[in-house]
Length: 113
Length: 114
Image (cartoon, chains in turn orange, blue):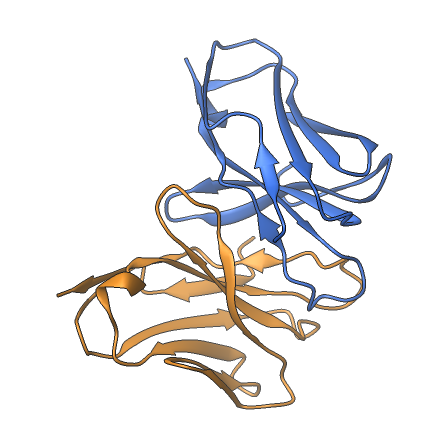
């Protein structure tokens, strides 16, 4: 079963706009929430990650917001650029999982110039 | 820089064939993973290995097996390929030591089963 649900499946944003991708999880044992970015023809790469002891983490134009009570987290891309066009995956991990990640379904982001 | 290398970018095989996908990492990572990526389904874990000769089933192991004889190499085996195994296959590796160790991915093998 899909333990991490991601939306939307695709997103089109104008250059300079804000891109928002949402994820919801079910397993309360999850305690690590990374986002991966994948460009066409490449494997995913870690973009930014958060642990549930903080509600927000910012790295440059990328921010993760985390709501533990709602079991939701989201990625915000400020001042979106055409170079941000990629597929984004949220993921979750926790417990004695050997670092196993459960991924969301992915969001294809297109930023128009 | 960590390098995860998958032996083929594109592969075409026939139904019923035994197919081997190879993955090599150069960072002495303990953990290695095999995923398949399908549109709308994200990345789904097939198998992972946390040490040489050790393996654990992921979420969708049916029809697959794996082999890890050396620390740097992790092979995915399709015992008898079927058309529903047509997909993008991604290998990843990471250090052991907690879930916040990032996974490093190869660029994938696009496998077509005819």
